[in-house]
Amino acid sequence: MVVDVGLCLYEHDLIAVVTTKPTPMHNTRDVEVHILQFSTGKPHPLALEPVLFVRKSNDLPATNVGIEIVGDYLALVTTPNLIESAARFCVFEWTTGSLLLDHTVLPDTYCSILFLSMTHLCLSNSTAGTLDIFIIPPSLQSSSKPVCRLALPLVSEGYGFRAIEGRSEPNPSPHGTSHSSIPFHPTSEDAIAIFNVHIRNAEGTAPRGDLTMFVHRAALLRLCESRGSDGETVDWEAWGPPVTRWMDTGAVPWWITTTTGQRCVLGATNMGPPPFIEILDFNPWTVKRTLGDGWDSELVEGRRSVHLEPSVISSEVFQSTVEGCLPYVSIARTSSEDMSFQFDGVLMDEERFLGLMLGDEGQVRAIQIFHIGSD
Image (cartoon, rainbow, N blue to C red):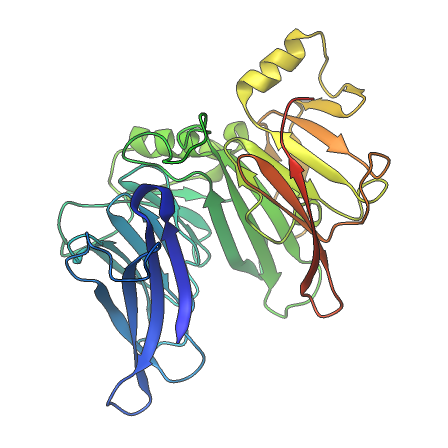
């Protein structure tokens, strides 16, 4: 049974397929990763061990997996439906099959992996309400723990983080840039990271918190490097407000594939005349250039706005008001601009964004593609 796949196409022509298969033991399955060459479907020629054993799972619904591949490293998070009482975060060197990092946590603690650099990884911790940063060691250590933890805003009594999903695109590359025919690429060092944060109370009743936090990948890496490697937890107030921007997830698509480089695309039916699409640009040079053209903070002219004032989230789910001061420029496009249907979701890559329209059962029934070019 295929559970998930991870891709590293431009750099290694690689697809990693996570599977579960029955074992001779009663009601158990092996969780494995098959290292394949994407263009041929055969075992990858650079992989000394084309099948990596991860762990055993029970024979109930499939193991949930998060997977990312950067350079020679394959990082994997396996979450509930396992025999063991703990979930597992591990990093393999996929070319040799060596296990370099192995960390166990409570189920549902981690659900996604974000590479900050070739050797630094950030995992959002739903149990502790922190961003946990790990460094990949040269060989397996007896103890693998975060070198730094960045705390998120404190939630109110009776509330907890249900899930925190993180992503940043493009991933770091050992050669500094992506391998493709495109002449120019966003750099991974400057890219924005997006975290979709879901907060619930013990009863599962309202009010609920569904929020999105934006922060530059480089800001997280600098914070980690400046704090040493003793596993210290840094309070939210000491790191978060100056370098983040928060939004209600009602304005952010539930698909997380919405950022590339320092841009994010939004699309929501409750924001202005439908269909509404907005691109957020967190590039500080875009902000400076726009202000240099004589635009003032929050001044809207045509489709463009500059946002310098803090975002303020006042919600019962947090103990106090949450602010984020990361500036950005937004460019909006509305239904008056030759768009033929109202979008249920939007996705984005380096060159284009996709507007998706769903059917009654949630299936994608129409896609509209827009090229990203000059105004």
